[in-house]
Image 1 (cartoon, helix red, strand yellow):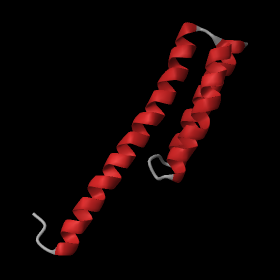
Image 2 (cartoon, rainbow, N blue to C red):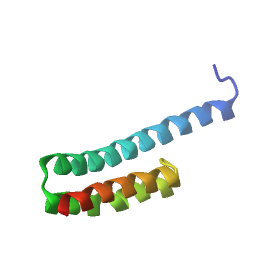
Image 3 (cartoon, helix red, strand yellow):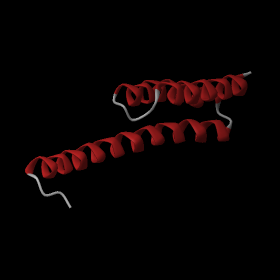
Length: 88
């Protein structure tokens, strides 16, 4: 248990950051799920639109420190290739 005032403050700060990061991660997963569902249905136009809206959200996760840059790039790349294959 934290005894010093600075340690107590850090705990409060960490709790706030954790809540924010959790919400961001959840939001990113929601966008990813929308793309996945569109791909599963086989609707190329909806999948392309979903990817278009998901891409900035994923990259925002990178700038906010929720995701690693390479992880985000890999996710976007794989989704883009699946959407492209769907429309072809």
